[in-house]
Structures are given as structure tokens and as C-alpha cells.
Length: 272
Image (cartoon, rainbow, N blue to C red):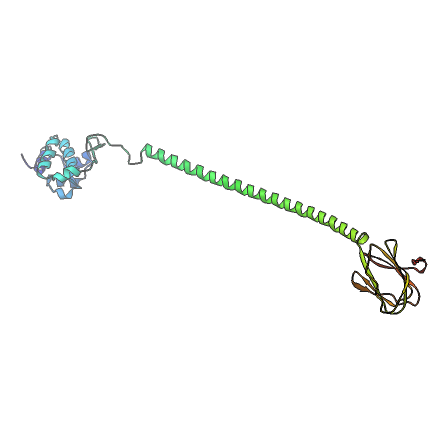
């Protein structure tokens, strides 16, 4: 059998067809067509393209493309190339792509519908997750604000209530202290002095004259009324010395936990 390249060239020359015409018809570049005619296999992309171009070129010239391909396989193709050759598309006579196995390949190189569907599902899931997280964050924030507001209101209410109770207790304590607290009273004479002491309506010192340096017992009552013949005495209320107004005549005091009040001469208590 004649050489592959020579067979192609002779057939083209007999048909008086230029390489450019074959290029336009088969969509195979002219340099690859010349490489086939010159059997310069190294200038072609690979064994798979060689066989595809051979088949297409032969069919365009009216030759048996299958026979030329088999001839190429027997003499030029390595067994490893035949096993490992990829499935690629090759143009048919109408310029449409066909796979190496003879089936027509898909027109576009874009992603398949299944792939696009999967991508769409993933995008939807991601969007839903983001929306859920944002909604959860907003709810938590609102709950926190409500909790903070509730706590603040409770704190204010508690403080107000505590203040009210404190005020009540304080008022009660002051009232008890002003009107019901017991007072401790004792006397110490610095010179002879007449003393009449009445505590809670009962006589404690019944018009006695205390001598200089004499100290009385400590008496307890809510209210004391006292008459002193003069100011020669030291007075102690709840353990603290209280001054006695200087006087050469009788003086008197009303003594409670709220303090002392000097009595008028006409209202001094008597122990008769």
C-alpha cells in the first residue's frame, strides 16, 4: 500500500483541489493538512488528532478514511498511545463536532444543567442560613434590651420601695426617739443645792438638798421634770454633761430624748 501522505497528496492533485479549499471544507488548518501529506506527525497535536484529521481529510477527498487510520495505527501509533488516548471531538463534514467514538459532542463548553442546579441549591441554603442567623441575632438583641429594661425598671422600683420603707422606718425611729425613748439622768452637786426630780410622773428625788460632791443614782424615764434651787450642780444626760444655766434662784428643766427645755418660774415642779 502506498504511503499515507502520498495517497492524500495524489488524491488531492487528481481532484485539482488546493490545500486552502480543503481547509475551508474541513476546518482543519492548512499547516496540519500539509503535515499529513508530508507525514510530519510531530507537527500535529497528538495521535488522536492525527487519526481524526486523517479520517476527515480522506473523506473530503473521497478516500477510505478508516483504512488510512488503520494504516497509521499499524505503522506509527504506539500501543500506549492507543490505550491512553483521550476522547476528544473532531469536526465532521458539516463542521459539527463529533466525539472520537462517533457520537456528536455537545455544542457548548459550559457547565451542565445538573451542576447549575446543585450550585443554585447551595446558594439558597447559604442565604437561608444567613437570614436565620441575622434573625436570631436581632431576637437576642431585642430580648437583651427587654431584659435590661425590665431589670432597670425592677431596680428603680426596688430602690423607690426601699427608699419609701427607709423613710418610714427612719420617721418611725425618729418619732420613737422623740416621744418614746428612755433618757438616763444623773446629778453631781458642786455646792449645796435643792433638788426636786420627777420622772414619768413619779418622784425620784423628793425635794432633797444635795451636799457638795454628792452624786445621785442614774435615773431612767421618758421624761424628766426637775427643779434646782440654784445652778451649783452638774447634770449628765445619757452620759454626757449638759450645762446648767447660771442662776442664784430656782431654775427648772423638762428633759426628754429630744433635748432639754428650760421651764418658766411659774411652772417649776414641786415635791410638796
